[in-house]
Length: 193
Image: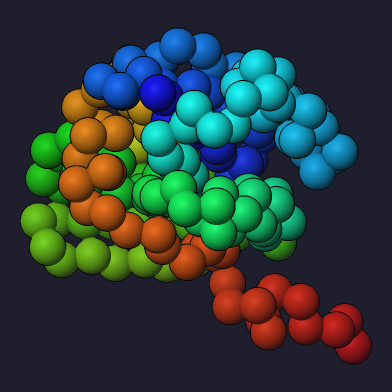
């Protein structure tokens, strides 16, 4: 029995975890149209035997709206088939790992940076224009190792290197979170004047 992992918040990260949440297989795929390849990649990863899955872990954001909708749709199918779906947001991962304060950043498109700042239970989320962005935390995280010209601790690497601990905690949280995009849908897809 194993767990499927899907993250399409920027690129497509797909993997298979054993019952102890150690990686059996992990791939990061840098293609633009994941909707045309994701089903084939899942089928190949599971050797066509989806029935041996014990559950599905998905990243619910923040990130690309369309990419996350594709993964959420697949998660809904697995849920309909009776499999538990566990989800998380990338900005939650440092706190899950025990980091008490810091800042998680990513590109929010439209010339803005998304910044998630936490200090214990105090949380601040904001969109900042690129020109005004100055990280205000010593502990800077992003999905990758760098963001703009800043060195960051990578939450993608955290998932890869500490999978056993992190996925156990995500499973204990037992949540299927809504997709988190940088803006509300009405604001993101407002017609241009």
